[in-house]
Image (cartoon, chains in turn blue, red):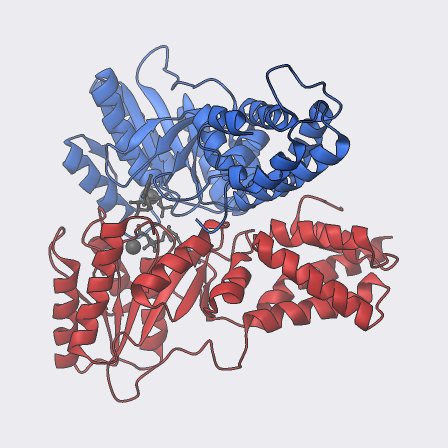
Length: 308
Length: 307
Ligand SMILES: Nc1nc2c(ncn2[C@@H]2O[C@H](COP(=O)(O)OP(=O)(O)OP(=O)(O)O)[C@@H](O)[C@H]2O)c(=O)[nH]1
Ligand SMILES: Nc1nc2c(ncn2[C@@H]2O[C@H](COP(=O)(O)OP(=O)(O)OP(=O)(O)O)[C@@H](O)[C@H]2O)c(=O)[nH]1
Ligand SMILES: [Mg+2]
Ligand SMILES: [Mg+2]
């Protein structure tokens, strides 16, 4: 990557702090400057960064250094704890309906990875939980969106529900759920067209789908490479659709993925899955604590503490 | 309403008439540029330059420094008037290769550009070089139908380099003016896939010595700092000649192109402003920078009227 992780960044400051017994304001200030840069370069939203830094500073200044820790270690420990807290600690599972089918709706910006994730999630549910999903093609706008889902269905040997591109997505979603009930499928996973969070007409359409089929999960699919705008997107989708979770895609890249923190901070819903490749098996449950160290570029935090 | 949440709102507050140009001012300006995804390093350098400039020109009021900021940013983005132009080969086949990570808008931009050239009366052929992603060939075919342009394709799963070879032969025999080559999206850290892309480019060059005449890297304006890593890797694999900045119709500003220009000197050539076939425009630096500030000024005006 073009930038260093927090580890390299902090090395100099840490050296200077060695052997001190108390964390001074100046020490913390110097370290926080580096923490701030690392977070910004990782695409964490600048407002989230500001609040984060303020919280950490408050906790770190004036602390007596624990017997086993140097001031440097102490600060890193606080940074890591606060960040993990922000990421949401526990891993979170998919909700299931009282009475099947469980309805899952994918929403998000154009090109985020919704259609691919529909296929991956279906594959995951079958493989890990022995479930029978139906894929619903409710993107009638993007050229060949239906072909794309049908091809994925064929590759996975799973049913795809489509009414072509001349029927409204609301109707398609409704009929798909009906079909799933008749066929005793456990899940209906609805693919929707990508849309901008500021496109009111298309955002209304999602609300209508939601009203029509009351999904158990409304998942925002977010590209892990998203920059500062992630907060606006997430806030907008959340306000209008009451998200139940997030899927972070393209984590197989070399992005730090600071958008994860931004999205978590503004929606306060868990990130449930991570996309880690283009193929249908490239989906895994999301691990918040691993994400925290990825964002900071810290590798193993404990090793860093030992070195400091 | 003053919303500190938006770029516009922030810039608006920043430029208020009574503001003086001091440390606070520059700190806020820094936040604003960072919120537009301009790279952190670039922002720091830029702020230093602006501080110098303010001192030099003895600028005290915020409103007086605004043109300086616009000027600096535009200068940074565009160094000569003609650099956004596509390198066309009059009377011969112009070959344009599109590259980029997954889902940024390569196929769509090709469809839009095909439409544009077609409208200019040129004969266009598109090559379905994404043989990997589900429905990718069908997607390009739909664009072909929509804008009335032929698509050269092979079966899903076939070798993209072979598709390119075919496409060149076909474009030649049709006496086409432009060949637009689609490729599968790939993340820049996938070595095999980047090598495959270099090969695709080499095949084009073997058939026509100067081809491809443009290698356009498609970047999604929503992308943050990772776009820099994308630009570096694709630059290395394919000698990128220009950037297509897509999805500028959203709220993201795509400010990372400033950093890319600053560090790698790759110019933006086209911008995507929607999903329709007419939503592609040549890049204009002044307009782009104005876009960052114009809304601000408009809002300042309405605020003034309201107060
Ligand atoms: N490397 C990688 N690529 C992914 C991942 N998820 C999706 N993609 C790719 O990203 C691109 C866009 O994925 P789609 O599923 O078509 O995205 P979408 O959100 O349905 O797009 P629209 O329907 O156009 O809004 C495709 O090239 C996918 O193969 C991932 O986790 N890793
Ligand atoms: N709002 C908006 N959407 C766009 C723009 N350009 C492309 N899109 C949408 O972004 C999504 C992805 O576009 P594609 O052209 O399929 O992207 P790609 O780079 O070819 O994707 P892969 O081949 O999967 O890597 C589609 O839903 C497009 O309609 C744009 O300028 N504005
Ligand atoms: Mg889709
Ligand atoms: Mg494509």
